[in-house]
Image 1 (cartoon, one colour):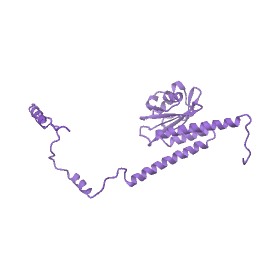
Image 2 (tube, one colour; image 1 turned 120 degrees about the horizontal axis):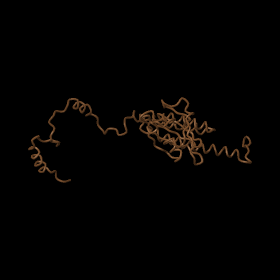
Image 3 (cartoon, helix red, strand yellow; image 1 turned 90 degrees about the vertical axis):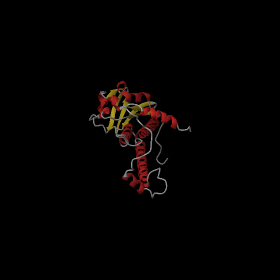
Image 4 (tube, rainbow, N blue to C red; image 1 turned 45 degrees about the vertical axis):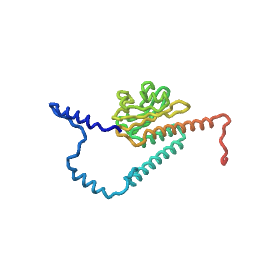
Length: 244
């Protein structure tokens, strides 16, 4: 390290003191004020605490965090089970909507019909239509939801951009910092979109990742459903005998 420039500082300080308005001295200096009793008492109270402080929190805090993680994992596994058990597209989309509603502050599921995006189910939206299934928006007018449909990829959304967007305007109802849209795909095309945001409150920890996981698993389940139906309809297919 270089030698501290005491001499240079002394000359500069003398020049500053000669200014008519005086010097603005931002040097560290030597403490001259007495230490407040509250600080002395706090230091004294903690003086008989040998060892280093914990870096991972108290046992109670760690136990609480572990329980929260286990609860989140149990919810995700339960959602997977319900998606796996769905035997129709309607049941699968309903299961996806219910799972999303339990993982983030506001959520919505839209289905794609041709060149339109239609409402399916919503949760947490105070300004949503009474019957969201009456929502029908041309793909080109669906904003970031339409981008998600066309790109078949995760899209980060600013909910405020939906202000004045007609049937989708309810998404902009609060000052949410960020939203997320994930496609549910079938055969390389988007069949549905799951949307979630934090409603301006930050939302549950990891909600974005959970929404993406749910959408991806729903896509796999939808592919499996379609393959099973195709196999049953294939010429020459027949039911297996009982006990086979």
